[in-house]
Amino acid sequence: MDQNNPNNPGNGGGKQDWVEDVKTEVTGMAKEGMHHPGTKPVLAGVAVGALAGWILPVVGPIIGGIAGAGVVLYNRVKK
Image (cartoon, rainbow, N blue to C red; front, side):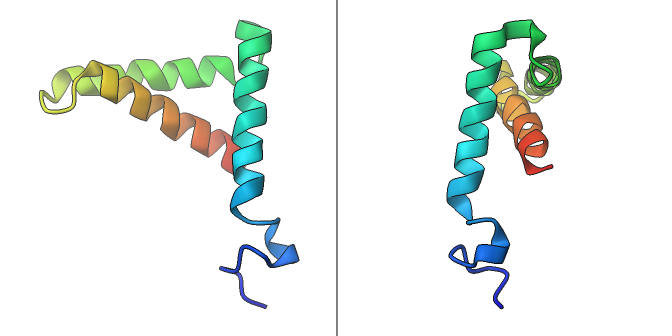
């Protein structure tokens, strides 16, 4: 079986499952706020990314914060 085939049933359904997992995670964080177990790590990622963006003049703190949140959210959903 091909592990790179998104239609492979052993591969978890591919890209669509990942998108649904992110959607579920973000919806849960929006509804539960700080009580959701994923909110604090994602906010920490925003802070680290914004700090890195502030240090790097090309990126800026807003882009850095978005990137930091994206990395933490991706790592959380990937598990």
